[in-house]
Amino acid sequence: MLDRLLIRSRAVPSDPPKRRGATSLGPDRDRFGLLKAVLAAVPWGQAVMGAAIVLLAALVPWGTSEVLNAMDRQVMAIDVTGKLVGESRTELERSAGKWIGRSFFATDLSDIKESLEQRPWVESAAVKRVWPDRLQIEIREKKPLAYWNSDRLVSRNGELFAPGNPEVAGRLPRLAGPDERVKEVISMAQTMSDTLTGHNLGFAGLSLEQRGAWTLTLANGIEVVLGRDQVEERFERFITVYQERLASRSDEVSRVDARYSNGVAVQWKPAATASRTKS
Image 1 (cartoon, rainbow, N blue to C red):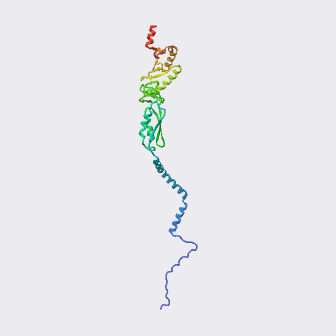
Image 2: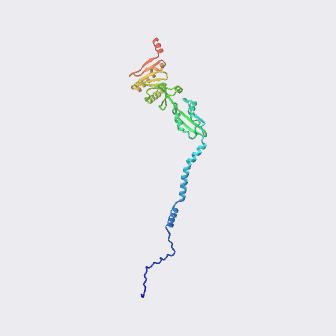
Image 3: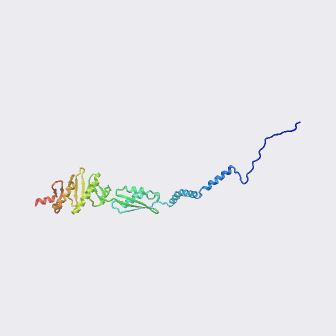
């Protein structure tokens, strides 16, 4: 018999002692804590305000469009203002009349402006809306300085234009020359006109031929041929001769040729020539 029975087994470790006053958290509870920390760090006041601003910015165009649509009407009348000489108020209103019946707010005023400024007499057109259903157009006309080549006008800005009624410009000097030299002709005309005025003479016109020769016309009808060269000197010589020898007989003079170096050649009117022959 066996005196002893030895039984050996592996020892089973006991549960580790629990720490008092501490609780271990699972993975899910850790995530919730992190989320709370993130949410606590967000500046909610600023975020809400930013969202409100974005929403308001998105709503403003829509709201404005809705308000304008509710207030919009058809254009019922067009008023034309401005001091008119060459243009007809009735014709201008008729020209702008195609915008009658269109949307008060949607009508492009720049289209009206551009259309009216295509008219020969119109320098500029200012168009504005007048609530609730009218458009007001202020017209500024070109200011004619002189007739140009008998069939057109030239403005004070040196712009050539060809209205259908140039005669309404009234009594103006007559200028002539190549179109590309219009500003040169204007400058020469202004200089001569000022000089003539200082000698109690009137300026009526100036022409520049294609080959460069100048011819001046006085208000009393006398033509002065100045040629191509030394135009200013010849003009001054004419003034001197006229004041000393011709002023008292200006009604007998038809033409003066100042292209001479020492004087001028005078062409008398037929009646004056016959009178001088008889005498």
